[in-house]
Image (cartoon, rainbow over all chains, first blue to last red; front, top):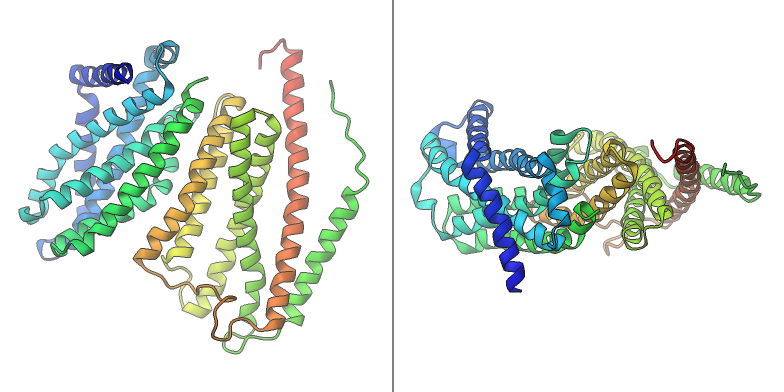
Length: 226
Length: 233
């Protein structure tokens, strides 16, 4: 058990170190999500009176697209200089590799969101009182859903001729329950603090995360281990 | 070794039987079944819409099972079964997505509505198009089979979750018409529906067999070619 934790720490540390040297992933992901807000602003009239009605949708659409571009990048890094071959040859279990990639993808996504959210709140003039534990829980489990599915599918997409284009095609249909629950949960939190409105959505997110984490953990060896 | 096609004496009778069953189901749907009171002849699309949906679910279930079997014992036959079933499933879910709006426009006054069943069907279509993409766009064929199997399993597990999450959200599509206690389906209609289900299932079986044989030949051809060129593709 201690060995696994050490291995995971080494793998996550590697990903974070690469990112701290280059910063290309976080900067492009955040800029991409900000660009999307501008586009959505023209698509839906997001003037302040109704802003809170469309804001949850825009928020999660931006996170969905940013996560699909970001996770493409994290797996492409492994392929550059044949890093993935080294990882497969090392005495690390593919399941451990999956957990480590999942955690680092989730960390990148959450870091991107911490830069993105305040800007989003300012641009749409959203109420700051919403930013409380229920919202953080929703944000965390929603992002975890993206990371759970994105981590395994980015490895599948990387072997395709269509490369980067494949990941959103593969992962967004699967992630429909996450997107739906995240948007509706956020809306419920925006409308009222009543827990009966947002709790079912968080439960759905947690359920999705657990089911697909177990599945991906079991299937990841087939994806990278050959 | 080149493949010698075996003479399968039962294949032609099986195809003929399925064709007769399909024709019979068509007669049941268009002539035997009574005209529905409020929808008129429009309702007859039901006998094609529902069986197509049933076949696509059956096909994707078989994709999932064959994918698990392939990952466990690595026999390429399971992979070919999953591949052929997925292609037929996509064909039938496409038919569902075409017959549905044709029925919905005069009935609901809109081609499409984002309720649980309709959205799930669309997502199902997208997932298995993605599945076929993996198969055809992966650079090495054997890797494509493995990756597609992984995706086929995850995709199938996702479908009920998609359905129930949207159902929580909203619903419009008529629920279980057959099982409902208030009247339900007329007996003749039920018979026509069962005939259609039987005929479509036989059509699926025949198509699956032919498609499987085709992929099997293709697989052998590739193996033979790569042997001839000394293992290089």
